[in-house]
Length: 73
Image (cartoon, rainbow, N blue to C red):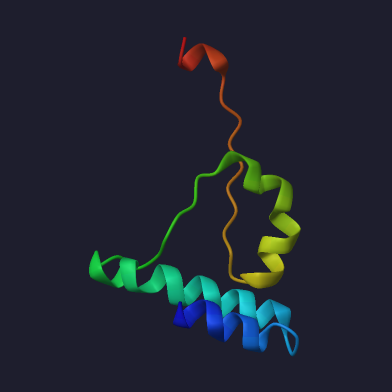
């Protein structure tokens, strides 16, 4: 709830920074608890929003895989 309140109060000033901070506030505690250095999102549809994701996460490493459907058949 605190992360969402902070997001709402900062969004009008700088929406990109507010989004970046919200993601950090929500994801980083989990990553730290698992002793990991980074997080990975594997949601296929997110590739359609790569431009927006890159603006929020400028150090983003985007890997777009196209799989052969015969792999899972």
